[in-house]
Amino acid sequence: MTAQQKRSPTPAAIPTAEAAGFFQRASTARILPFAIYMAFIAIADLLARLGLTTDDLRWLYPVKIAAVVAVLWIYRRHYAELAWQPVRWTALAAAVAVGVLVLVLWVNLDAAWMQMGVSAGFNPTAADGRIDWLLVTLRIAGAALVVPVMEELFWRSFLMRWIERNDFLNVIPAAVGLKACIVSVILFGVEHNLWLAGIVAGIAYSLLYMRTGNLWTAVLAHAVTNGLLGVWVVATANWTYW
Image (cartoon, rainbow, N blue to C red):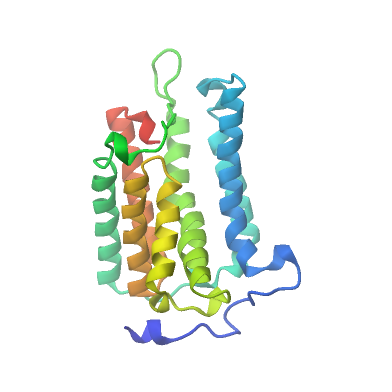
């Protein structure tokens, strides 16, 4: 355990977990961006069931990302774990390596029994066969720059520590027990169509966070995975992985 991991957050450095109002709570600040993201997924599924096509819904993703960014910005002062902390270059290198490894595993852990349902994916190809590069850019930017921050705040910084103890802000990552880690990782896995790949990714990102005590290492690894996955999807036209 490093000296950085041994230090507990001080009350002056973080907002209290039991603020007066619901929208001022530390838990809400980490849950709400994720909840909005998931709500848009549910809306897209509902609209598809009502007969809207992929072309009709292609601009829903940028709207979803914009909504998440707006909420993250509103709550930006609540995220003490995203404040700048010195990070060793070895930790950054490990995060990049983990991100690449998760990508390789992600695109290979795709047997039928490793999936739940069928992913509609996101196809940016227009009716004339040309790729809409604006949509591709927005998709990769959202997946690599926004989703990792939103998901790591929820899954690792909040849920994993909250399962360990309700006053999660005072739980240092290295102190998270096996139960909290396993439960959060399984839930993270089943959030994804490729549930086994999701579990593997969840284990990797959780261990990074717990070992380094810095959420940015998990965010970086997640961003590397998502960014490279986007490049791979476009290069191979495997749109269902989106």
